[in-house]
Image 1 (cartoon, rainbow, N blue to C red):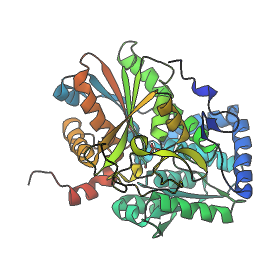
Image 2 (spheres, helix red, strand yellow; image 1 turned 180 degrees about the vertical axis):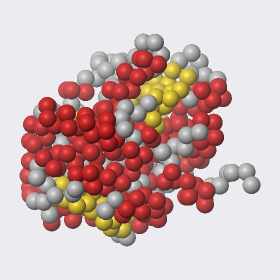
Image 3 (spheres, helix red, strand yellow; image 1 turned 30 degrees about the vertical axis):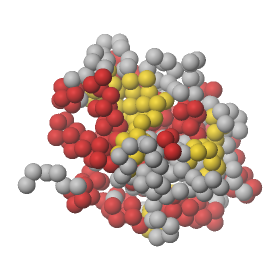
Image 4 (cartoon, helix red, strand yellow; image 1 turned 90 degrees about the vertical axis):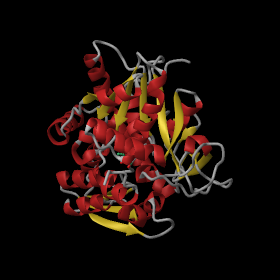
Length: 408
Ligand SMILES: Cc1ncc(COP(=O)(O)O)c(C=O)c1O
């Protein structure tokens, strides 16, 4: 396989191979084109880059460290497992990496209001913090099911001055919140900025979010070389919802053909991948088909007419019936291997990492940890770098109320 050069993608129309693009009605297509032009001009501007560097260091608390998971490694007796600690990023997940950059772009475009949606609440919390930092108004749409499950994040957004709109339509999940927030944005395009929470959506969003997240990959590469006396990891493992934490860390390693890259997607309540039971999982790579959804072309859990099917995962941030176009392309060319991890495996990893390492992972990130512990025993002598995309504080109440495995 030839080297994957991230700078060659997307093409000028926002495509990664056959995936991507911007499929919107003319009025909204014009808005995304405007954003694209603005972004392509500003992304290499020295002032923009320096402002962002300042924010990363003095507000977000970057660089986040890499931690060697010694006890986890000893337990599985195989490859050494390292964690890139995005849980230590301010607000508790990688989402702040794109949120701060988005808000800086919005400010420079003269926008005064943020309208967005959130699943697990991490993107919402990150946008709320970014809006507070830049003194902007912020409205976040959240599905009713997610708002209940991730109630600490709803409180955090409100504390930071954001208005949270709870969406009862559909299944009360991320896709329903996304539909509602887009409709609200359409009414206020002149003053509002619409930051999508992952590498999904019409061009130029997948590229913008990937670029904003690439700080994770750049840092991780440098840090890993330092910790291991000049070696790169043999394997990189992430969880994938839309694909933003994945693209962040991938961007540091995709060009090295001998590094194997894995993505853990959510198998939800299914026990294996033999049979697709719609509504029981969010395994897009395993069961998805090509479809145009939410204004872009990618793989998605969709019916024959391209209508999204219900998705499910215990991790709200993975509970989405699709992923970004670059994920679909990387799957197609075989550069990233997708594996499905179910709820039980992720919940076990949630408890295990907490107990063995003193690090409570987000349920989303626990999918990546679970995959790492499945792969590690087969590769003694190798190294695995897991992107620990977020911390699990938001999930503690939900897990202890529904899956309590603590000794009484
Ligand atoms: C901690 C965490 N990790 C991962 C994800 C999944 O999103 P993505 O695939 O865009 O990184 C989310 C989404 O909310 C999240 O909160």
